[in-house]
Length: 400
Image (cartoon, rainbow, N blue to C red):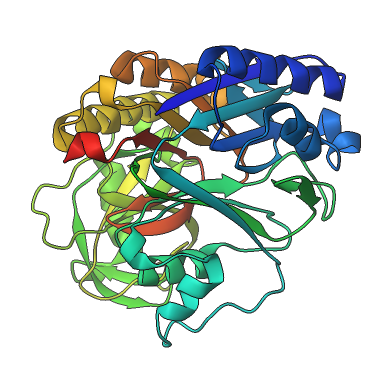
């Protein structure tokens, strides 16, 4: 298994593609290319229709997916707000790669029905232990229902990806599949065979206060924590914060939902981070960006550059320790990072990829800055915000 990434700042589409293909070809050497992923900034919008065909002609991958992007990641760089195109390619011996497109208006199978309907939708059986890379147009498709269905039919499979970016109106972005470009829907790549995709999801937050139990909630409205009005709980929590954290909580307070109810000492990566949408002091309630149930445990979180950096280091350290995987086993990685991260958050270029390199070494990393990021928390796949979702690819045979 071998991966390579390249990036071009050339503003001429044909030349940019040629530069990237030449670089990845030099790294991969001769032989078939199993999978290619291409991401391009809106400076290439007039050429979106031609882009996948050009890559196909010059590189000839067995499967190709990609999308428009507000920023791109590859070749050791994270490029934002500038014209750039990135190409990631892999040679995957013993791996079959297929790709699909789902129209944004297509009806999905019922979750109450048989899992075989979901298998037919994406053309693979659960017994094949597939891995999924998913890219969606944010204006025409919400991947939430698809993620629920894929988790239902393929509970042990990784699902990573993101929402296309770089467009401010429907029809102005693009999804790439094979030699075609689509203005709507979802594209995906399905990998099965001698491949494992490990996932690392960094949601960019640190916890404050203690873990509390939901004692009254209706849908996404949280009324009581530990038998007290939720607003009162927050007030008392604020009183115990330092000046810096109180100021930060005024603009960057989030709710973390513990995904493993049996976990006694939860740490980084154990909470699903969701927005705190609103507060009703009169009713003592808060509105959260996730449906809650009584008995769930939650913890409030803060997000800033320092918290994001600390958590990224923590989850990558946790990956190294918990998986028992040496960096040498990881052949390549995909990174789907939020548009709200990057240099705007850290005031430093190439931050997430730099931290990744500290932990995993010179593993090729390609990807883009998304309008929403797909990755699992507690074994369930979600669409996130302000997150960096990594997929780390390695041979299955090496882990057996």
